Amino acid sequence: MSNTTKRALEASLKKLLLQKPLDKITIQDLTTDCGISRMAFYYHFKDIYDLVEWVCVEDGKRALQGKRTYNSWQEGLEQIFKAVLENKPFIMNVYRSVSKEQIESYLYKLTFELIEGVVNEKAEGTGLPEEDKRFIADFYKYGFVGVMLDWIKDGMQEDYSTIVKKMSLTLHGNISNSIGNFLDEV
Image 1: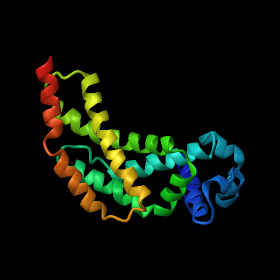
Image 2: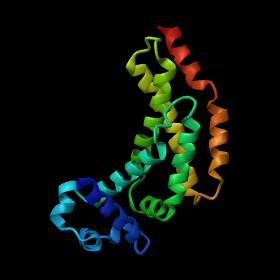
Image 3: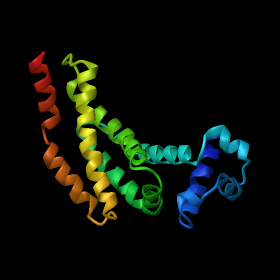
Image 4: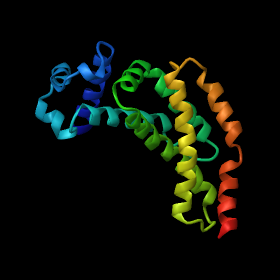
């Protein structure tokens, strides 16, 4: 039941964002649209921005669906771009309504999971400390998010497959190289 309520709130939020900006949507609007009480809303979320963050993270997790390995990270990244494009009205409204730091935070969580899986796979058995693996994942996460934010800011005009291909060419072998470089310093 809990997940059903959250999904209903997600659907209502996305529907209402097609009609008005995020800062004009009230909790009353959401609860009326999906037929739940205000108490039910507050049971799951502290405010609308908490719901927005949950929606972004959940959409991202659905887009990734286990694509966190070296052989599948490009597909995972492409699926993130595709999910963002498919939710363009939602994303653009959120992009215009919340602070850049909040958007970055949503995207950082998403891309960190993707890159962390790749780093852990490539570092398996090397003895590389967790803090170094985390640093490598963080480093690439910032690049991924920067590219995606520029794409969103520009109205998602460029074909995301081209962006993912360029990112792949730029990154090819670099995570393994980074791991090797850290190990050489030990």
